[in-house]
Image 1 (tube, rainbow, N blue to C red):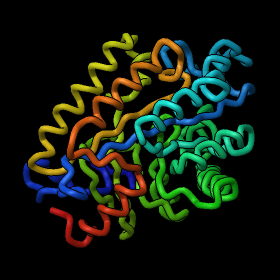
Image 2 (cartoon, rainbow, N blue to C red):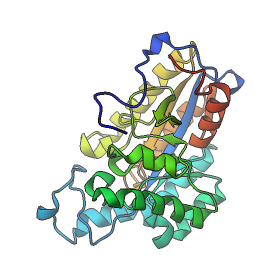
Image 3 (cartoon, helix red, strand yellow):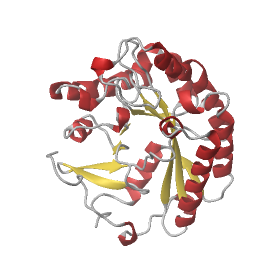
Image 4 (cartoon, rainbow, N blue to C red):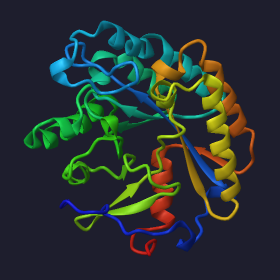
Length: 300
């Protein structure tokens, strides 16, 4: 898209929209997004607060920071799977495609649980807005193709590594068959983007009910649990009038360590015990929404 002061979608104030009704009268669509990521030991790593470190000052290999994240793939992701399975919650994996190459056992385990996959870049060490413009379309196509080869299905959704985009990212995503995007954390309901006349659904993701805050904002486990439950309470209450979406965004190396995993168990138990909650996936939200609220009618 061309550079512009506002996004590729109309401003549509929440009170002006027609009510959304989820399946079986549910108030809230609840989806859980495990970010399963790969970091190349040869690339610069984030610091202690998950901050980016300029490449000219990066320590390579940054063993501590890399190993901290590798714990997520070696140990913690299996705990997360166990807890989610216990509550009947399927994941929509934001997947670095390098996982398909280096850790195919994780892919097989996710498939056994009937989890979905969406693209999340090749590796979280490299972001789209940090590469030459001519490399971006190749990188995006590689992610879609790698995941399709590994899983048998091309991903339909996308979450950018670091939620990073360029002015051309959305065009490249639609070119590769992407149907929904999670980078634009500006709503509690899905809405349509217009990408050169092609609709792309913006799916509610969250920077608030996201366990990266535990690291970046130095939150305690109890504080994050309270945030998740309070977020749910308000969206559930508002969902009586019009359907809302709650995203719970997880990183196994954060949420899956021994002293935090029981918190995830408590949050899922709290959400799932409520009537009128559609526990679902990104693809299922997309399919229901475009069928019942098509882009040519659901607009200001």
